[in-house]
Image 1 (cartoon, rainbow, N blue to C red):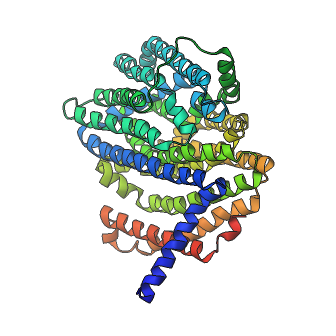
Image 2 (image 1 turned 90 degrees about the vertical axis):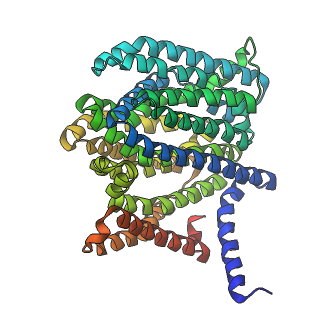
Image 3 (image 1 turned 60 degrees about the horizontal axis):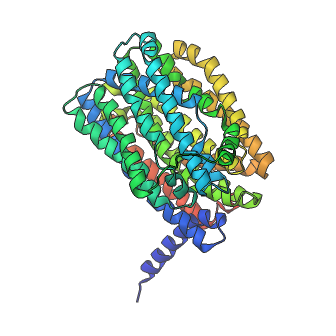
Length: 504
């Protein structure tokens, strides 16, 4: 016989689990499909979580082995590579997932040739451009670094396109092994090399090792022999989707990387390294969350793309979960950001606390904005998102230089914050017209999350007179306690049904 306490506990956890299952349930009336989404989320979540934990551990080790200049130089290499990549992006993976014939052999073969041909073109462009990039930043070593790093692009382009088919068919375990397994091997390689190579070459070789590992794993997990030719109609089908995304990667790059380009020109590699590692501290988990949601929910949105009501409910529920989870973290970073940087990377990285705080706001809004983007992609209308990105890119171009000159390192993230706020507002209006999103309900999501998070701010402010709590470890523990209280309040509201009006 169970005691009364045990019965209450069983009901509590049963009701809580039921709330989380609803997100998958509204997307799939079929039990089989719902199970695929939930199982896929577990696989991708476990793989991505492991990867991000190892990346964080890698950064903690490397910031103590390598000088900040190494991270600043690596930020330039990644940014320069991204420019070339964005100029030739054709959306092969997204096109294959979205197209009804994406799992047919003709389309799989066409996708491989498109991806590999693009990779070869990218390598050639970067090889030629490397000396000019090195000259622009006054660092001759960048020539060799860029040419070696760009080898990873060849292996990324050669990945078995059957891996993308596995994503389309919601066989997420295979993609998790390929994507996160390769990333983990790259992380381990970078750490091992850093004990012998105490400069940026350890980061570059680790970056290449990650791409090589993903390519090899893709053919092991999803065996495929690319054909010697391709089907012209399949090429046209995939390129038809790419018309909608044309220019998107380059415009996105302006939003994501403009701060690095400007700061690299105005500040030393050491200052850029401090800034880059600080913002990566929040961008890394945000990227983890975006990728996890994109890989699981894009196929789900695609399967209910004709049902506005169901799409609406998924969007509202996922956004609610993100806001209720993310806003307490924002308050935590606001009061504990310097302490986190000091403990994670060392005392000198605490100087980048302000960029970290603003980057946390940018990251949360970007993840939330990405949920609307997935609705556009699932409907086969990526051009709606392109208009948003045009707005963000223009704002970044206009604001980035004066913001950096006026406010210093934090100016890079202040310009990004202005851009993402404008982009999110634009996308909200577009998705309202597309699926009938209730703006009043959408706005209440953020009001409720802000109200719950306000308690963390009060807790942090009330302890300011106690000097001992200002030390890094006590400060972090106090902030974590505030987050736990905020999450407990959110869970309680879920269980009582106070958030039912947001579900529609």
